[in-house]
Structures are given as structure tokens and as C-alpha cells.
Length: 117
Image (cartoon, rainbow, N blue to C red):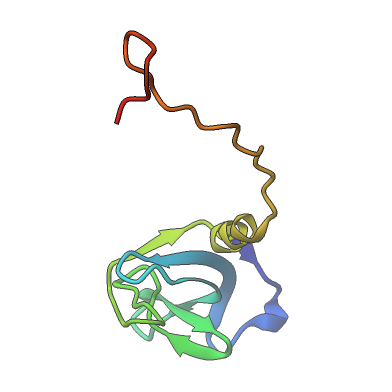
């Protein structure tokens, strides 16, 4: 899930960059998506460490603090390990072989005279 990249990937002032990927599932509308982030570790002028999340070349808020659904703007979003949304989509589109149903039998009355309603 985490991977530290080489110094060439560092933005100005970053001491390290870690790559993280997450899957997200909205509990409001059911939308699912995946996103990868570069997490840049920095130190401010007072020596305090902080991180910046970068997705698709843009600085974004941490996906772990109140994530927002890209489809409905809902905030009830479940964060999952990477690959979960893709594997669910693959399973949904996979052909499933189901055996054909046999003849349906109606229940008979105790004397075996006629089917019960």
C-alpha cells in the first residue's frame, strides 16, 4: 500500500514522498472509485513536520479526513484497501453459470387428492 519513491520525485521542500492508493465506496449512493496519492513529507520553518497529499498533480485534502463522494457529494464514504472497487466490478461482470431449475412441484393435501392452494 505504501511505497517510498526516489529523490527525483520530490517537490520543493519535501523530505520524502510515499505513494498510497485507496478504494472508496459511498454508502449513500453506492458509487465506488479508486485514487492514488503521493504523500509528501515536509518540515516547516519551526521544525514541525506536515504532509501534503497530491493526486493527479494537484494538492488535495487528506482522503482520510471526511472524504466526499465524487458522484453525490455525500460524506458517508467507506475507505478500503486498493483494488476492492475494481475486483467488485470484475465480479459483477463475470459470467455466472447457474444450473437450470427443475420442475416446480405443488404441495398436495394429506390424502394426495389435489394440490393445496
